[in-house]
View 1 (cartoon, rainbow, N blue to C red):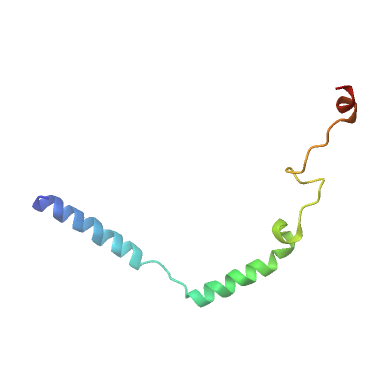
View 2 (cartoon, rainbow, N blue to C red):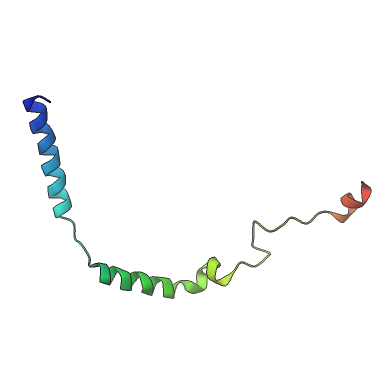
Amino acid sequence: MSGSSSVTAMKKVVQQLRLEAGFNRENVSQAAVDLKQFCLQNAQHDPLLTGVSSSRNPFRPQKVCSFLSQVS
C-alpha cells in the first residue's frame, strides 16, 4: 500500500467512525420493553398466533372436482 492510498483509507475509516459516533443509541433494556409492547399490541393480528381461516389460506389443499375424479 502506498502512502497516499493508506492516508485515503484512514480518512474513510475516520469518516465512517464519525458517522457511527453520531447515531442516537437506545439502551437494550428500553428496546426490549418497546418490542414486547409492540408484540402484545399486535398479537391479535398475528396469523402465527391466531391462525388463518380456511377461506383466506392460500396454502390450503385444493379441492378436487368430483366430476373430474369420477370420469377417470
